[in-house]
Image 1: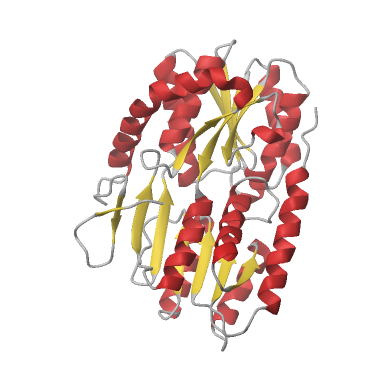
Image 2 (image 1 turned 45 degrees about the vertical axis):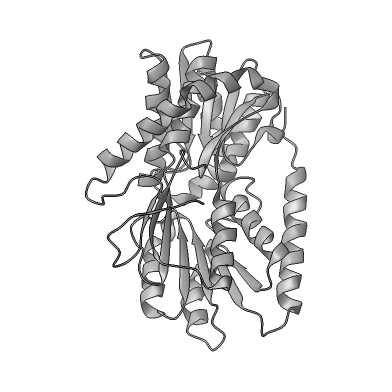
Length: 349
């Protein structure tokens, strides 16, 4: 079975409409730049960020300029020009150093750094999604659904951020069944090109399915399309998607999706910039406050009860994971710390 791609056309149309709006809008409107981690049309992480921009544009007046990785080298020169944006959004852990340097060079510009931990400052809001809890629930679901006792996870590349997915998934699966086998593989272990190689991801999935793995958690951006193909061409093989509800891409094979509300973070950041309430600092969000979660495919609604039964335990496990991982920061989920403020404040995405 080949997944259908109606969303790609819609995404492209929306992108063109937004570009047209930005080009024809008044030059007196405030300007926002956004740098994505990959091309629009990945049906995953980047598209979720793009949807947040579109949502903000529906209700707010501003011009937008969008950039992909191939454009990022042009940003320093553009920001040094005469037409500076008021807000720059960088989406992806790989931009942490770039964001930090640009913010230091341009203290008059605000930056929203998505999935870039610990770089918050007066003009940088560093928003870190902790994906341990939703990945834990994905592991619980996989271990509950497997018929072979063997589950897997495919990641685009190796990074601290994606290690959180791997650890959460493994811990959740083994909380259900300590003897479950958890296979894992990287599309490109040392390159972010692993998010744009569906062919290699599909070959990895075929090997996993061929050796008995029957549920794969796919965390590889656009590369995950290859895993959808592999599952559709097999029998009794399933997927747990990521970042957005991916069940429409494989209605018969996607058990659920571990979602990350990047769209909310982008749209809220733009709104707060425009209404004057934007603040810098480091923010951490996860399962407990709805920044991440699990959406079960209605076709497999029987697993809603399983996910619900384990949700509190997953929240507790995520809190414990965060304390172990960053004990020096003093952060816990649902907290933000602004520069010079020792008192954590409640945070909602």
